[in-house]
Amino acid sequence: MHLFLKLRYLCEYLLLLGPLFLLRRLPFAAVKAVAAVLGSCMYATPTIRKLVRANIAAAFPEFDDARNREVAAGSLRNLALNLAEFIWLADRPDRIRRNYCLPEDITVMLRGHVARGERILFVTPHLGSWEATGVMAPFYAGVQLAAIAKPARNPYINLLINDKSRKRTKGMQIIFSHGAMRAATKLLRDGVSIGILNDQNTRLRDGGEFVNFFGIPVAGSASPAVLKEFCDAHAIPSEIIFGLGIRHADGRIYAHAAKLSKPFAEYKTHHEVLQELLDLTEKSIREYPEQYLWFYKRFQYIPRDCPPEVRARYPYYAVEPGEKFYRLNRPQQA
Image (cartoon, rainbow, N blue to C red):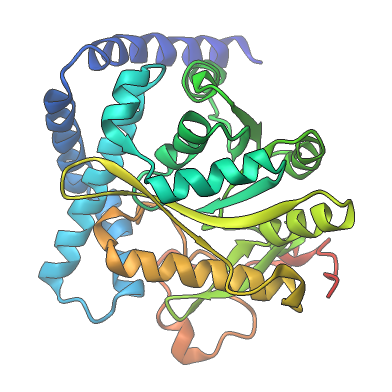
């Protein structure tokens, strides 16, 4: 690493340590207040506000301006609270029990999978608290879980977020996105379940597929179906579970879970599986729009054959990708 860049990353890390140290020592009411201020500051930033409101307008064209603003502001406050809460309760079992709730029926279901030696392919979107989703299954139900995550560019902050926060949850480990499929298949063989975020842009050359999301084609990863197919081919007992951590009226995060509507073997293509999972995501977002991460270029790629009336619904930042987006894409097996 270049010396100047290394020094810059180190300074960023040291500047971050002080606020994080103070945040962990605040009462939760103060944490919520800090998050509310941070969320309001984010909404006041023109570039952030423009992106968030454009995404909401694409997904909910029926919203009037007031409702769009309300959802946008709520989404940014939720993002800030999730980040602050995650830092506040890291490596604190008492705080996890206070803020994260795994209902009894889901706890029994997950413990049953563990007792039978079945791997779980957890699929979750950036809705509610996705960090909570990765904590609750290991913490309450004893699931050995590896979550696929994108590393932070700053290696010191990456160490702080992943090794010193996420990995401190008993039974939790992190797989970085580069080479994630190879690492995931090895862990599945070793009895570890895998956590997958299903609402990220994935190039077709990297195993992505175009699927409908709020009536707009978006690029999504077929990795849940690919990993399930791997498990079946190698006689590894497994099941895909769609999971959420939603903040309820009492301020706590509650787990929600759903399974595919039919046995995996009855799906003809990976696309069908991915579309059903994204349909579950969309249904949940419609119920809790303020808790979705709209601060992300989710509608980034326009497929080549997109009709004009659908193309017109894409936000300002969307582009029709070049050949590199498609190249190296392997034909999927039925």
